[in-house]
Image (cartoon, rainbow, N blue to C red; front, side, top):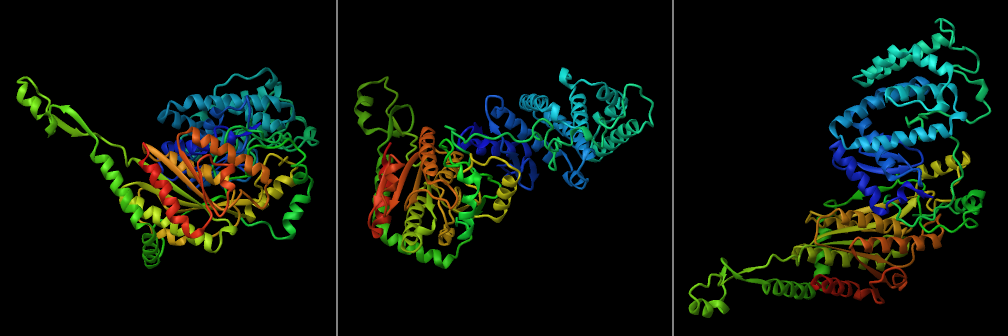
Length: 581
């Protein structure tokens, strides 16, 4: 089965982020996947990393996004977060979700389809797990059904639940009229008080059996099962979470993992991590073809544009220009000559076409002796330079890669091409390691993941739309290099940029690697991502820095065997691509 991040390739996570930015009206909002989701944070929406199969389409995930956006826009989240965990909070979240979704649908009627898909999936999951639910969780689900005006399935019918819903009908009507988060909380508390009164026998209702097995606060009949809280601590839909997780098969996804977002563990830690049964059986399981991270929420993207030292940049720029000045002038002449020769003749207005003067003199009715320059897209090209920042690049390699990036970015900016310079590595994350330990302790099958304790460390040294290049002075080395994920991230950014052509050059000195991942999976992952990116029309070039490893992954590649030749060689390759129509 595929995870949500693998459902639509590297562009899926980017697409969800775009939808989130449109719906929230906030620039910079991102969407990430994590087993600890769902939740709404400042500037970020965390979606649970569900497995995607024939029953869970990407429409459901978009519906989930719509729900979380509705919470972010229209709910006062601190009021809900301040409530103690329990059935009262779950009821309040249920009422609040119906209220905020109604507001979102009023603004964006097109979201109705995706919310509907989410509701249908929630119903399906709830029915599958119905026999494992506590009475209070069944009641919360029946309240959900009532608020959404959904029919009750045959398996969900019981006298006690029907009596409870009937006894709270007037309160449900008040809940439907909720106009704020505070109203939703008050309505939930009123419903909860009514049901507790029924259970205690304080309200006369012969159909409600107030026994030990049917109670809003206790459920002795189900203590042998794992606890099931329809919203857990973070407010997920009753049908979307709660059942004990079933073992997940290792992913054999053919689509790309989303972009989503080092250093290996201390000497004793990686061996311990690999010694446990979860990680040991990874290699015995069917081979994964994509490298799926346990979570992307800990990945860090740092924008260094305009944060470099100006004096250091001037020195770096002078060094770079000394090596590539002639190449840049040659490229500029070639581009200018190519653009000057493009004319549209036989026009009614424009510049006089000297070749048509004789015809103008001999043909009295001749009316098109003019020419105009054709609208050329010769410089409508966006270029991304992606630099491997792994520890093996330390020293002379990273210095030459920095100088090469400086030379290319400086020349491209002067020539009128938009460009971006990015870097990547991975590093151990204490928070991600804690998540890994919690998931393992909970008995969750982690076989399908290939990055368990390391987060991505992604750097933007010069972003599109900015002419400021001083950030390139901050290029340095990190730890490991998960090339596939970084390439997907860079390609997603490039795909978002409007341009007639898009070129992505990646500088690498070896094979992809992480401290906690299977290297064969990382290589398979990189090959599949390269193939998927090329299908989008992005032109990829792999630059091998003292290595021919790029030949195994990039159909268009160049191997630089002498470091001193790196800037001039790469500039020549890029120049020929820019002149190519």
